Image 1 (spheres, rainbow, N blue to C red):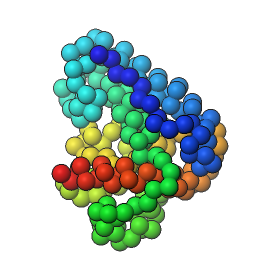
Image 2: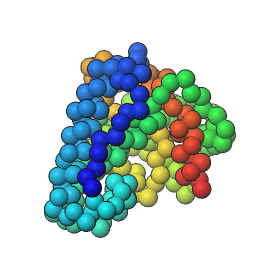
Image 3: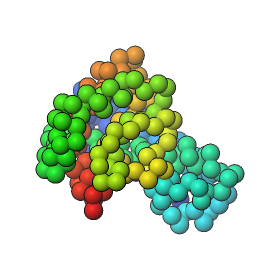
Image 4: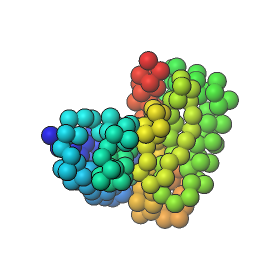
Length: 201
Ligand code: MN
């Protein structure tokens, strides 16, 4: 069983004008596809790993054989990270319920959270991701470089922003802060809230 490129679940143009259709098309069909193909290719040398989920593999990199560890770290990471990114994007959803309460309690206010998260995304050097994770029952904002995943650190991601240039350069060029602001208009908070409740158990 090889890993398959997951569907977006919506059209490439669904996030217009904040994230443009051309960027979404290339990002999903080319970038995410390449991570998927390279992830599968790496596992061909150790096919017993196909019995695990991608999340299980990236959560336990120590058990991945040394000869493919680097390739798995990058490409299983890219596979899993993008799959989550597509899921937490959407339209017309508001932060509510238990997650809203926790964001306000742990960050002060939604605006404070947005400022922290956006600040991390704006200042992340090079290519990487900014995450809202659940760690020991608490919310935490973390960043990772390249395709590293917080799952490898035992943290459960519930929201994520791709700040690789391929995620925004066609529309925003060097204006990463405009892309970050746009991202806040297309978060599927229902999905994020659902994952929060699941992570809390
Ligand atoms: Mn990407």
